[in-house]
Length: 78
Image (cartoon, rainbow, N blue to C red; front, side, top):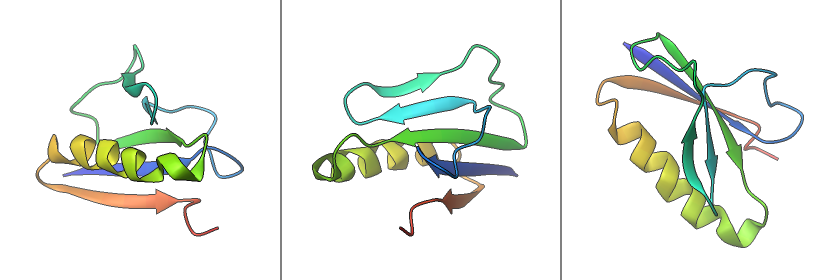
């Protein structure tokens, strides 16, 4: 089973991540991402709170690609 970890850009963001979700650009995949790895780290960039709904839709599209997965959210509680 795959674990998808979403990190909001900021303090909780990891130094290395597998792909980026940006409300303006959509989903960007890094070169070294393997779709079969156990943990996928996703950096989520929100330039403005008004774009949060678009960002959540992009996150949902990413989750749909992994029908059996665990999702973890980091840094979204602020």
